[in-house]
Image (cartoon, rainbow, N blue to C red; front, side):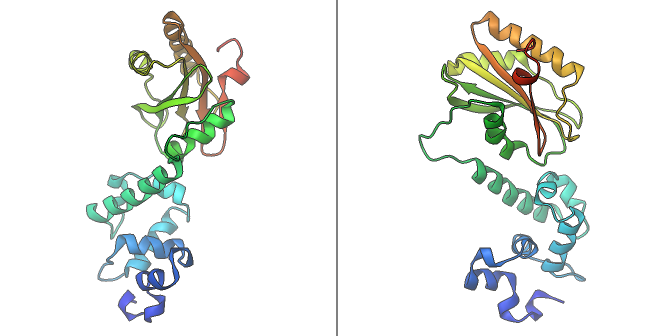
Length: 228
């Protein structure tokens, strides 16, 4: 059934305008972003099918690249870009802080809460750093590298350069494991030691290396005292 054939009160766009976005289901909100359906499916039906393919999870949907979305039947490059843009706006909204607010990071949990909006749902590894002052108050958060499904490069020279440029006193290294297990690999252990040696040489602290998944994290400072 085409959306135009629905009664006006049940059409997603009209429903949102009259009742507010909170009155709509996830598939209805997604249909508004998609805008147009195909010859055989309405935008709402297409949205329902797309969401079903992600098992109803916005986290899983947000982990799909525009290229992956555009391969879905009925979703071309334009619709894929619209969906990816909407999800990225939501991700940035979740991380936006009031002007002038800077958070003190006092534990691995606080680091996880700070960075998870950037990394949740990704199907590949990324390396990020959080630069802090002497009281572990955030100065800046930067992505350093994007890798594959089971590895990423820790660019030590870039991290050292960013740390010196921002005049940071300490660094939290963070990367994700899409596999769902936060347990460090042997390569993670080696790279952590290399970064710590490089930072120590210029008088900067490696406060912690936190490996995160969508629902858990591993702290080198907490679990591997000899490493940090």
